[in-house]
Amino acid sequence: LAQIGAKEVMIVGYSWGGNKAVLLAEELRDRGIKVPYLILNDPVKRPSPISYLGHFAWARKAFKFLIPENVSKCKVYLQTTKWPFGFDVEGVLSTDISVEHVKLPHNLMDSYPAFYEQALKWLKLFQEEV
Image (tube, rainbow, N blue to C red; front, side, top):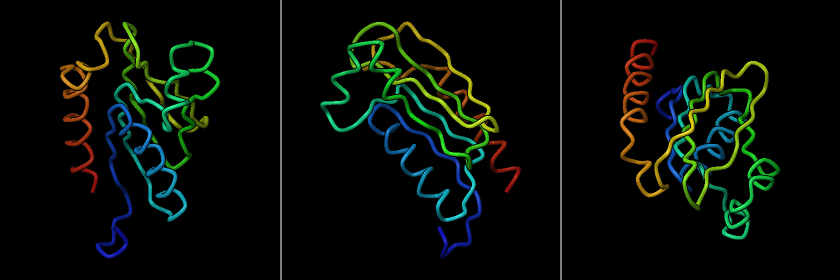
């Protein structure tokens, strides 16, 4: 990113990719790169022992994802039907976080139309801003 002079990046992550998306946002924060848009689709914690704790609502709250301060807007889709459940998300006050609960199983979340609509909407905005 530094080689091409990127100052901002949009990130999308699904399932364990949601875990990686948050880690990437943290790395970008440390490099001074902003993330105006972050979309997480049923993000599941890694490693596996922690993701197993997702069976329990208290664990999904205790091991929630912390969104770093370089993220401006974060849209989260969480399914509510069966394991593996996505983990809760919390950010700093400056981060606009919106959570939508979806009645689909985890393995169908990547086909959820609203997820694609939001990603395309923010991608268009991102392209206009850069």
